Length: 253
Ligand SMILES: NC(=O)c1ccc[n+]([C@@H]2O[C@H](COP(=O)([O-])OP(=O)(O)OC[C@H]3O[C@@H](n4cnc5c(N)ncnc54)[C@H](O)[C@@H]3O)[C@@H](O)[C@H]2O)c1
Image 1 (cartoon, rainbow, N blue to C red):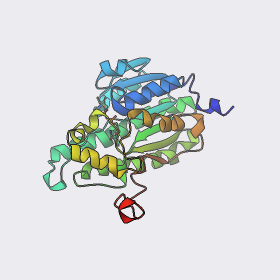
Image 2 (spheres, helix red, strand yellow; image 1 turned 45 degrees about the vertical axis):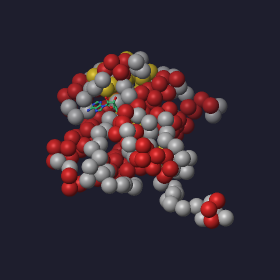
Image 3 (cartoon, rainbow, N blue to C red; image 1 turned 45 degrees about the horizontal axis):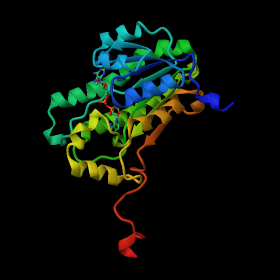
Image 4 (cartoon, helix red, strand yellow; image 1 turned 120 degrees about the vertical axis):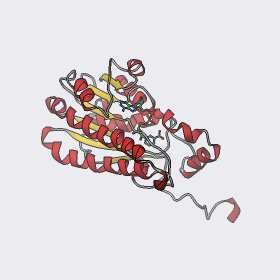
C-alpha cells in the first residue's frame, strides 16, 4: 500500500531544464515512476533524450514560456531547474551580469510557475518543485546575486504554498549542495576548490545528479502529500556541520 505512494502513473510532469544535470536525472526518475514527462529546455535535442515529448523554451522569454504552456492542458508536476551564476565579488559584478542572473533564476522560476498555474489547477493535485541551493543559507565570496535569487526561491515556494493550497497544489524546493553537473565546470577545473567543497560535507564528497531524484520524487508524488512550503536540503551534511575541526580526531588523541 505505501509503495504506491510514489507511483506517478498517469501523471503529467513538466521538467524545465531537462537537457542537463539535475533536470535530466529528474526527468529520467519521474519517467521510471510512471509519469508522462514533458521535457523542456533551450537545448531541445538534449531534452528529447529524456522526455516522452520535448519542447523548446527559454525561461527568460515570456512568449516562449506561453507557447510551451499552450501545449500543456493538464499538469500534475512542475520542476523548474534553469539557473546561471557568475562567481564574482559584488564589486566586480557588471549590471549586465546581475540582470542575467535575476532574469534566468528569478524571472524564469516566477514566470514558468505563474504560467503553469492554470494547467496545475486542472489536475486538482499539482506539485511544484523549484531548485534552490545551500547558497540560500550560506555563502562564500563570489556568490552574492546567485545567493540572493536562491533565497528568493525559498520565499516563492512559501507564497505558492499559501496561495495554491485551496486548489490541491503543493509547492516546495530542494536545496542541493554541490552536484556534479556542467553548472559547476569552473569549480571542477580548480582542484583546490573542488576538494574544499567535498571536505566541507559530512559525507566528504560531491553528489551525483541521481541523488537529487529521490527527494524530488517524494515531493512530486503522494508520498509528499503533507509537505508544502518546505525546503529539503540535499547537501551531504554541508550546512549541518561547521567542518573546521574534529576535537576527537586522531591528532588530538
Ligand atoms: N550543480 C550544483 O552543484 C547545484 C547546486 C545547488 C543548486 N543547483 C541548482 O540546480 C539547478 C540545475 O542546475 P544543474 O547543475 O542541473 O545545471 P545544468 O547546467 O547541468 O543544467 C541546466 C539546464 O538548464 C538549461 N537552461 C539554462 N538556461 C535556460 C533558459 N534560459 N531557458 C531554458 N533552459 C535553460 C540548460 O540548457 C541546461 O540544460 C540550478 O537551479 C542550480 O542553481 C545546482
